[in-house]
Length: 313
Figure (cartoon, rainbow, N blue to C red):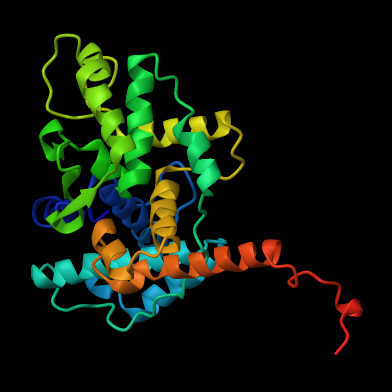
């Protein structure tokens, strides 16, 4: 149902918005639904309600859809994403005159539950960065990936697409094409520079094995590695070195930002390095820093944990 309209929408996302395959996957899940799971996609719900005309989808239908998802136990964060996906889809349909008007105007977005992202301590980061076996080409590559994720705060989708030409080892900068085709400069330090130089000069050449590729991080067959490999590698290396937190590439991005702010970096500098369009997105890391500071205070200040019964005014 609605295959033609959906395919036009996907073409728009790819051609005009330069959407990643994961963004496309999320829109597909939110609108079309997951055929292997429960019918939580909007189109699946419309089919259940026998609604065959997109013009008939209004605020009441969307309220019924959200009520259905709540009954199904869907998290607030997922509800908000599904509403956002529907809004983007119907705005596209209205703009392209596929429907006569924007039919779901005024649909409220459920407020997301606020959770501070996991952050590694500096000691945990040190363990993780030292975990890969650098005596192998694969280990050199994986060690360099971890160094860059933490040293630059890159998104995994940005890192997997890096080319050798984007790396400036002399200036220690990388030109990154991020979300919305926005270019930014990220920085890296001596340790990451050493890892990059070693990998490019040794491990990468072995992995290429005569193949030609401009992509920086490649597989054993000389082909670009995917985001999924990086995610699994980060998880396995964290587990191997005894880190009990749920670690993924974005955890290193969170850790980069938090440690920068802990070290006195200006919020706007961190915003630029992360490629956030809004300062409010970056401000979540100030909350993490405050939590960290409170934890350090409670552990180290001599008066912080005195037994209240022993306190005399």
